Amino acid sequence: MIEEQCVTVLCICFLLFIRPRDVLTKDLILRGEDREAYWELAYDQKVLDRTPIIEVKVNGDFACLQACLQTPECRSVNYEANYSRQRCQLLKYNRLNAPVYKDAPNPYWKHFDTGLSQFVRIKMHRDNACYVTTCSGNKEAVLSEKDQSKCQEFTDENTFEYDMVSGTIKSHCTDNYLCPQYPHTKWMTVMSGDHPCKYDDKYKFRRAFYGAIMWGEWCLFPENYGVSISGQLLQIGLCTEAASRITFEHQAKPPVKVSFYKTSTNSRSSLDAAIQNTAKYPNTPDWIGYGDTFVFNDWNDYYMLRLQANFLAPENGEYKFYVSCDSYAKLYLSTGKDEGNKQEIAHCLSWVSGWDWSIAYVSQAVTLTAEHLYYMEVVFYEDGGGDRLQVGMKLPGSSTIQMVEAYHLQLIASEMEA
Ligand SMILES: [Ca+2]
Ligand SMILES: [Ca+2]
Image (tube, rainbow, N blue to C red; front, top):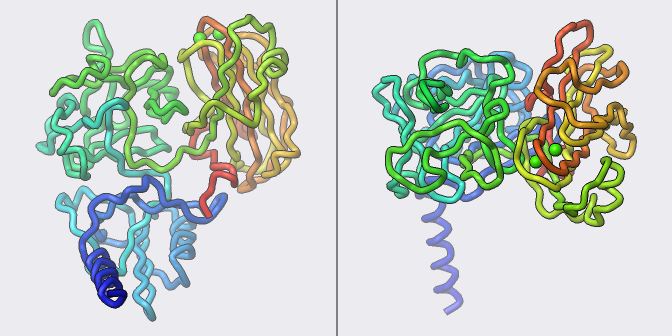
């Protein structure tokens, strides 16, 4: 009997091993830590790129990713570990030349992203319906798909590439970009051949900590606020908590950890007062989410947030950091990765109106070293009315203020998987 069970288990293991996998159940397979962190794509229908930039000799998949990080053109790698043999190909990652997915030629190849660009499906938060486009190449609206069965696996129609550097969402099969347009009375989104969508730098797609996809201060939402109707459009509108959200599926974890605390509805006159009156802060948040940046707009009332990430300094020199808020916020920066060494560098004492950096609170100059990580934290409190947060910086020698973006940030070490 025991032997039979063993044979059965062996057979199941064998079948699991040889059957082609469809979609992995886990969104993120995160490896390594800090700067070296990377993730394996959460789907398995991967194509071996026809034209690797180069094949390099390395010892281990981690070293293969390192080689990719050090090669500017490289966006992903194919890595083969076949017992005695290891191969590492660095790729530019252009899948448009391969419209039909084929998995790797043998089960030992794996494909990895380096993390700045990833394949996602666009889904409704409260539904399994996903948004699809056609692969004819026509510029047209992205439509919802009522047939949820078509959203269970990645297909040419429902797969999009989210690039956190450019903040773009691109159709896998047509090379067209999802772009908001303002035709008459409402913002809607269409698939456009233009790249990037021609708007201010602020207007990128970013993942918000509450699961929505932001575009500037607005959010994607379905035309009928979540009532699943085949063919409805994706629109851009207010990001209130009550609005039905559009989210990415099969995304890697965005870099900013956000802890959320409901607060009393009694009016508090300052961030310090809110902290003193919120017993749950900081160790027992009501929930935790992840976002791309320290940026969001109107969402709810009476809450506190603690936003944490590591800032990767791109250059040597003196930086200035900017924070604007509604209603209150403090910005902290550490002398390194250690949270224990954080210091308050800017205090947003009262709410500001609008996104103009000229009315933001600014830090003293901070000297940072290129390629080093610095723990960054924002503590935020919103009582009522509008909500707003944005954190920007002035790079050494620069006269312009820019957002601190997802690609300047990394998950703090406690969020890394072993
Ligand atoms: Ca509010
Ligand atoms: Ca407010």
